[in-house]
Image (cartoon, rainbow, N blue to C red; front, side, top):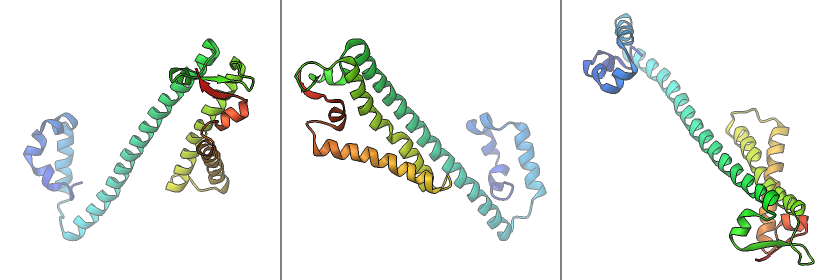
Length: 194
């Protein structure tokens, strides 16, 4: 600190800046100025060593900020996603129809054309939302393993790839058969105009 930030510590304008005054008090300034006096060697070798040390800490700070943004965004996304799933499943339980499909004028019927019952619709929506929720642990496991944050145990990576493969299989099936998704095939329901 005394070598890399020597000019800032000795600059009076630095300490009078409002943001610095809010973050650092008089004792911080006194400690910094004493450190400058104690470490008055500002040779190129010492400055290079100090800059190398500061660069390492800045890298970790930048990584921490990046991770914080990643986690905050991920948590916010999954909170909203979970809220949508709970609204959808709650409508099935209390109203007897899917919330989002109902908004778009789509009804769920059985093979005989009668409206699907609550239990069947609950199973269908649990499957539909379940495939989406498999993506959360898959993305987290793969991200931690591939980024090197967690050790890449064979089984950890395998679990991530299996979950991701299930999600991709469900998405591929939806593209292949857009008229009837995997959740409809497994629950015996059909989408029809309301």
